[in-house]
Image 1 (tube, rainbow, N blue to C red):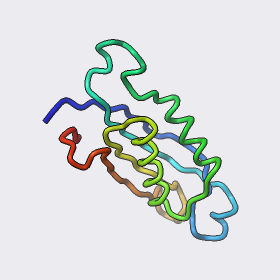
Image 2 (cartoon, one colour):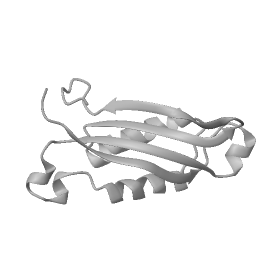
Image 3 (cartoon, one colour):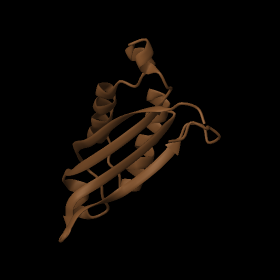
Length: 126
């Protein structure tokens, strides 16, 4: 197995229109997102942002998507974000979890977690 580094973004709080119920399709609701983005090992060797994934731009792009789009399912949102992070930011792999806090009485958070790979044959898996 080759070296593999990753960027992590935890506890990203955003507002989004996600859901199938009428109230969810009208009002934005809070989401919490945790990300791990696989990248080529050794970005720190040259101390160059071009060798890594810019986490500020990543967060801005996610917020932009959520401001512009509505999703019925968290699963669809997760798939969309994973594909975007691989295609636009060059992530080798993406592990992400999206949660809706407090939407069901007595449940702290509900959500989904997925892993996707840029190249299904890659050996650079976490």
